[in-house]
Image 1 (spheres, each protein chain N blue to C red):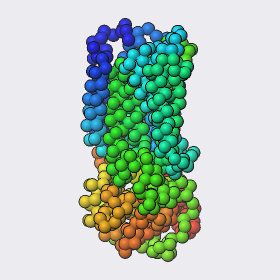
Image 2 (image 1 turned 90 degrees about the vertical axis):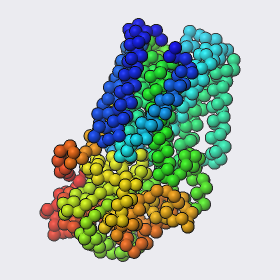
Image 3 (image 1 turned 180 degrees about the horizontal axis):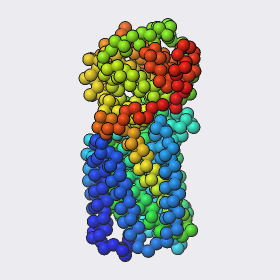
Image 4 (image 1 turned 30 degrees about the vertical axis):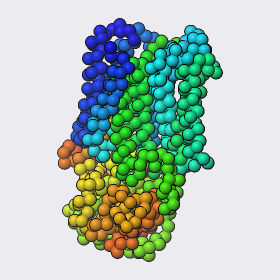
Length: 105
Length: 525
């Protein structure tokens, strides 16, 4: 039932709309980490890549799957890691209590 | 897909929880305080999605999956740890490309798998995969390939491995149209026409090649300063490619999550186009050659936004205007800063090219210690990608609450004593608000620095910015131009103010021989 094309198309359109509403409220301040975070999220294609690589057969289908797993994992791991690294840099001494002069020179 | 491990309801609940984690992760991006946790929740959602994906497989051979994940995770971690903040646009462009590439490979692999065991060459893709399967496979491969190739060109440009200026091939619009038509024809042949040359597999690969060529050609004519729009658009494509792969595999999780990314890229693309005062069509078709060429749009001469990095670090050209003697210019700037109570810094990408941000931040700290109110005004297109300048300043340890956005800060300029412009031009160009003139900037939202009591501009030169429009602010009597390498200029100002922390030894020796002993040598660029 869930895999019929009309339902999947409806899901697609609704998700696009929800996405637009979600993203519009995010401040410019965070747009760069947002983009690297969505890089990681687009790595969801890893789930499809797992399917493609599941038989580990050394034919073209399997090798394409292997490459897809590797690329998608770079996105997932690299995307979340670099986003975390950036977000650690955003700080407000007044709020977090971290010293302003802790990292100089 | 047969489900061996999870009951169907378990799978649906799992999908729901994973989607919820992704959505809440994005919701938490509305505030800086919660953003990091949001990223963590999103990663948790991904972990759940992958586990559900593995459960979906039932029995599987783990060799390829483990190998691919190990290689990918290692590369991802190294890249994430090493990338410089100035190089974030390249990093994001690269990840856009890999995401699109992965979706393309998944769809191609699926096609190969379905035709394995010698499906007759005369059958069409539609006969093998069904009508829906054929269309979605073509879309997944096509969007993925355009994203992969376009992002690769964007990375090369941003990294300056190929020239960042628009690369214009003769008759490019006709050529783009032709390649797109050929790609479409190849896709149609593979999908629907029996006994196409080589059967559906060869046809699909030919289509893949055409789509890769199209992605390359589409990004080549786009100049470096337009990259924020292109990166945002490719970000959107990478999500849409994942969603299309979801259609191929009939997996609603991929469709929903891919759509979220697609939507994000669409929103960011619109924000960037608006902030640059250009329509998306103008960026994609324009490069140079849009209607604005006639008004003198010469991207190669752009000092503040579109410049070869080396040029910014070259020895400064002699100041052509205003203070003929740079030293007295610095002294005048220092006098203004000493007398000011409220200061706003307007940073542009030129500041990052001159690696001046750390000195600018030290200067602002020094001024703050003297009881002055100092803030930063960040224009949406200051940098090479959305929000780039904010990250560069956060890296230099600026309190994010001091970073002000356009609308907010424009209310503050009239009550500001000194605006310090560092490496920015177009974003403070009042010609944008001049209703009597029609320039490429007309109507572009700008930082109204000219409404402050006085303005100090630390730019490499007084040439127009990327837009090619002369900046009347430079001729304003209340503006003081300090031309030359921004980092040296700011260091000069700091020394004159009596702030010696972390000054370059070289500069110090040249200009302040009495003070050498107290200076720290060098500073990380």
